Image 1 (cartoon, one colour):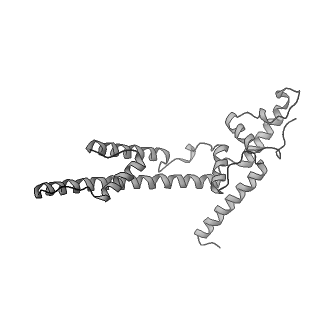
Image 2: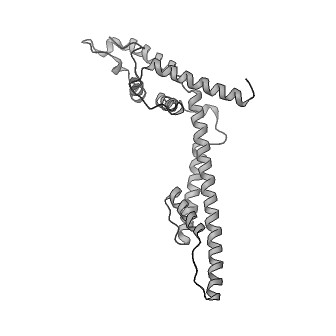
Image 3: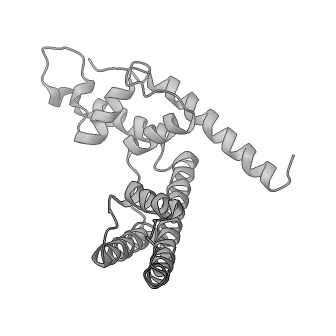
Length: 209
């Protein structure tokens, strides 16, 4: 015999998504797996239909990821400009200090900027070559952002969203700890609740009570 839809857990769904095989949904039996083929195919389809190909939660997660990626690019570009400005200022001050016969003390602000660059990129600014490294790194991140989030992506180019991604998105959005032992029917209720919240939030943003 095979599991019923009410016995399916998140772990079962993850395995189904990863292997594209429903053999693990068979409960111990002396009968060969092919004997349950039609039942397993029907059960697998029921699972896919319940979760859906793409949820509002997953769309929201994609939008969030895009915004975070773009925000990080803005931070990197701002840091690059600050580094260049500070280095030019540092060079000018250094020249005047030498002329005046005084020692140059590095500004605390410059140290903070260098520290932020190291934090976000892993690049330690010590000489002009490091500035080039930072510029190349930012260019690489811009290219990756465009690759992941093209401005005009054709609708037909969208790949089918995996069940696993949808599951993780729902848990993340609802701030719930991932639980692979959760029953599928319980997860569906959690997913519906998440999508109701999103719909309500959209209506509020649009001025709909």
